Structures are given as structure tokens and as C-alpha cells.
Amino acid sequence: MTALLSRGVPFVLGRNGMKSLQINGRAHQFAPAEMPATLCALLEKLGIGAATVVAEVDGRIVTPEQFAQTEVRDGQTIELIKFMGGG
Amino acid sequence: MSLTEEQIQRYSRNIILEQVGGAGQEKLLASKVLIVGVGGLGSPAALYLAAAGVGTIGLLDGDQVDLTNLQRQIIHHTADVGKRKVVSAKEKIEAVNPDVAVRTYDVWARADSIRDIIREYDFVIDATDNFPAKFLINDVCHFERIPFSHGGILQFEGQLMTIIPGRTACYRCLFPGPPPANAVAPCGQAGVLGVLPGVIGLLQATEAIKYLLGMGGLLTDSLLTYCALTMEFRKVPAQRRADCPLCGPNATITTLRDEGKVVCNRKGCKC
Image 1 (spheres, rainbow over the protein chains, first blue to last red):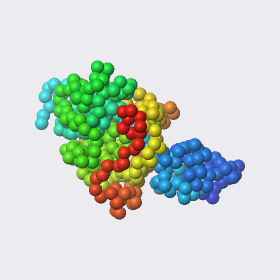
Image 2: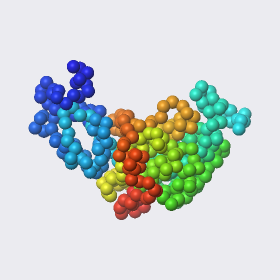
Image 3: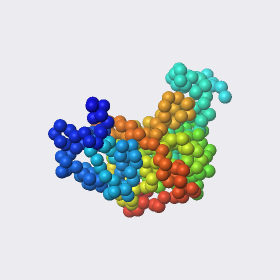
Image 4: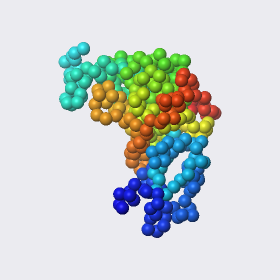
């Protein structure tokens, strides 16, 4: 069970019924009603401009134009990778 | 090529390393690295690669030294303000190590000019300060099959990734194209902590030396991110993408082109 939990199997809910996302290496908990439905909604919640990052959801790259259609589910591992143009 | 007595002394701390040795040092002296952008990332990379004895260093930058550069671009000194960056950097490299042959290109990175330059080198360091140039270097290196290190910085954060074209994830596998105009503030507007490019630029130089010597494991198929505020380094896995517009099987980018210039009205800003 521990192994299942650490892999973030979607149907596993925390003891308190919270939903969780692993975002840039940190666990984020959301009450079920507060859980963002899409990547767009997640970025808005985190205060990150949608055009400033690409996302990797469970290892799959999602480009900014797909954010609105990309559903976010409990247990996912999400990397938000910033565009960095400076040198 | 065999090392002189003076070279054996100069590079003794390299040579004493089992993984380098005399043969490795000779290899470095016979190697050619191109640094595109002689600014925050390019300054430390150029100085350390020169000190390490990379035999040929190319410097490409069409800009001149500005007073606002000096807070981080450590190859340029106060007396260099107004001087061409490639000239200023060449002088310092030659002072650090006369073994190094410096080639200068006082031009901007553009599709029509950079391809013939890049193909002469063994490894390229992307130390540019704008997205069109970063994508252009990725594309040229893909077509010419030249390995390179992508580097980028913003405020307190930096990122880098090593790309072996045709074998490992490319910059476009992660970022298919530049962000929309004005979505990401350039350093001139957003600021950058002066020490930050030192960290990232030297990690890029480390990758160059490792590649040239075939030593250790390269930072391929993953992006290393660094945050100076939290002191966190993270490696984000980045796989080659089947739908990569450049290196995927159904690539849509088949010839070299300049990405559209991002609009920025700030004086002297190239972002």
C-alpha cells in the first residue's frame, strides 16, 4: 500500500478526504471542492501566468495551448517548467 | 600534440585527475567550444574554459559592454564600458591563458550567419539572452549534429540541459516554441541576481568539459533547475517527444528560420 501511495495511484484519497498533486516536487493538498479541474485552473490558483510555463503531467509534456483542455486528477505528478530567456 | 613542461605545470591539477590525465588535457587543448552570448552566462563559462585549457574558444556577440552589465558579466571590467564585448572578452581570455586561440564573431545570432560558424565547433554553449536565439541555436545544432548546453536565467532562478542532437531530448521537446510576446519579462525589466548566471554558466562549462573528455554522465534527457532563494536544485526528466516539431519523426521544422522577434520597447533590450 505504501508503494501504491507513493506512486500516487489516482483512486487513493488521503485520510482526510483531501486530493493531492505533486507539483514541482512538493505535495499540494486540495479539498475536493477546491481541486482545480484543468491545468489552466491550477495555474490560476497558483498565480502562475499560463504563457510563462510548459507543464509535464506524469512525464508527458503539455504545451500552453493545451492547458485549458488538460484535466488534472488526484495523485498526478506535475512539473511546471518556466521559460527562461535570460543569459 | 604533446604537452610542454609549462603546460604540465599549468594544468597539473587537471592532469592529476585519473579521469583527465595528460591525454585528457591534450584533448582539451585540441577542442573547440563556441560560446554564443558573452554576458552573464558566457562570462564565467569563457573564463573557466580558458583557464582549463580548451584550446579554441569562439565568442559570438554583437553587443557592446554597458555599465548595467558589470553586476554579473565578470569578463568585462569597468574600463571596458563601450567596448565590443567579443574584444573585451578576448583580451581577458588571452591574459588568463595564452594557450587559448580566441575567435571572435561580432554579430548577432541569426539564421543566415550562425550555421557556418557552429559547424566548426565540437560543443556549443547557449549563453544568449533572448528566446529567438535560444531556439535558433537548438535548431542549428540539430541540423549540424553539434552537441550543446542550453542555459537560461530569470531573477533568482536558472535552468540548463545538455542536448546531443538526434540522441537526446532537444530544447523544443520541452518548449516547442517561444512564449508569446511580453509573456516572460526580460532580465532588463525583471532583474537578475548578479551571482545567479555564475552558477548556471559554470554548470554549462562543466558539461562542455565532461563532453569533450567523455567523462561522467551528461545532463541529457533532464532539465536541471536551480533556485537561489531556496537553494534547491531539481532534475526534471525530459524525454524526447514523438511530436517534437524539430527532432520528432514528423518534424515540421525542416529548414533553419529565425523565430519572430519578441516585441520589447525597452532601450537597448534584445529580449
